[in-house]
Length: 335
Figure 1: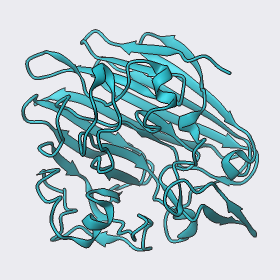
Figure 2 (figure 1 turned 90 degrees about the horizontal axis):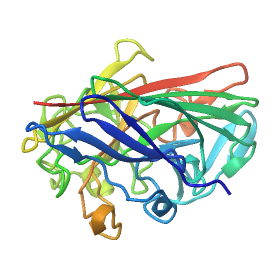
Figure 3 (figure 1 turned 120 degrees about the vertical axis):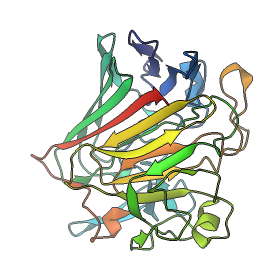
Figure 4 (figure 1 turned 30 degrees about the horizontal axis):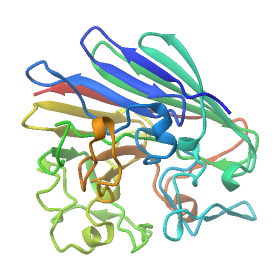
C-alpha cells in the first residue's frame, strides 16, 4: 500500500495550498483576509491519514464520473454498464472507490506546481477502459489555484472529473451570509433522488437566480419544491458560455466580514453548487472542530449529472485517440 504524503504549494503573498497524494485531496488553503491576516478557508483534517476514514470528499479529486448516475446504470454502444450504488439509488462520484479513495503519484515540479498521475484500470468501479489521468495543481503569484485535467482511454468510456473543495471564506460558522453570483441562467431540476428530470429550467423568479449577488441563506428556506428535494442547494447550473470549452468566469463569492473573495473560472459547461446540507457535526476536522450544517459551500465545475442517460445533454463519452481536457481556476482576493 502506498504511503500517505503531504505536498505544499506556496507563493510570496502568504498564500499556501497543502494537499495529499491520497485522493489528491486539498487539505488546506491559506489566504489573507482584508486585514492581511492569514486563515484556512477549506474544511479538512490535520493529518493525511484522517482522510481515509473521514468525509470522503473533503478537497478531493472526483472521478471517474463526478455527481450522480441514476441506478448506477448507463448504456455505451449496445452494452449496459452497472456501477456501484452508493447514494440512495445512485452511483455518486465514481463509486465508493472512486478517484477520491486512491493514491495518486505526485511529482512536485517546483514550489508552486505539482503533477498528479493515476491510471484507472479497465473495469475499475464498473467503468470500461483503462483511463490514464494527469492533474496539475498550480499556485500563481496572483493567488490563483489552477487545476488542469487531462485524460486518455484505450476503450470508449465516460468521464466527468471535478474538484470537491468545501469552502468557508470566513473560516468558521455557517456560510449563509456569503454572497454568491452565478453566471448561469438555467439549472437542472431534480427528483427526490437528486437525479435531473431531463430538462433545464430558467432561474427567473426563483431562488435559483444568482445572476446578481444574493446571500446563500437569503432564500434557502423558501418552500420551493427543488429546495425541499435538495434540503437546500445541491443542483447543477448550466453556465453562460459564449464559446464551449473556453475559460470563463462562472461564479464569485464574497464573505463580507473577512472581506475575502473567490472568483471561479472554468472551461466546463456546468457547475454544481452545494450548500453543505448534509454536514451534521459528525465530521470533526482540524483542532477538534466539528463541521456543522451548512458550514461550507462547494463549487464543482463539471458536466451534468446523469448525462450518459440524457442524450440531449453535452456528451461525456471519451474515445481512444481523443484527449479529455478541462481547466478550473479558483482565484482568491479581498474586497
